[in-house]
Image 1 (cartoon, one colour):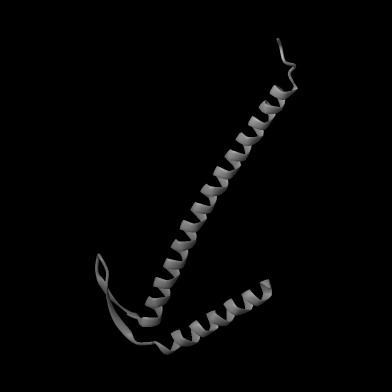
Image 2 (image 1 turned 30 degrees about the vertical axis):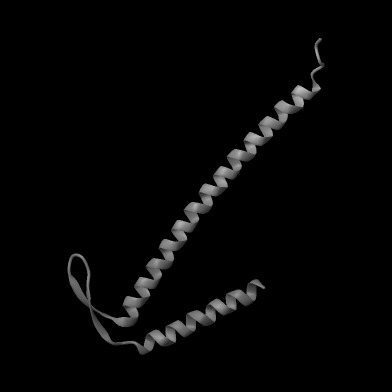
Length: 94
């Protein structure tokens, strides 16, 4: 299954390269500090790549936050389980 997903990803990448090679049109791009003329394919590639990277960064941070929270809560449960076992093992004093 993993090989199929990698193959699909490679095919999509190749299609993107083929379409990008056809878009050699120069466009004016105004950004905060200045403006420049870029090829449409380059501009789209930069926008897509930066969005993809930003998305992975955000998802990675949220994943790490959830994993650290899970580990902390698991340690807390183990500690409470040990305390509960100790309370159950003590004899009842009357």
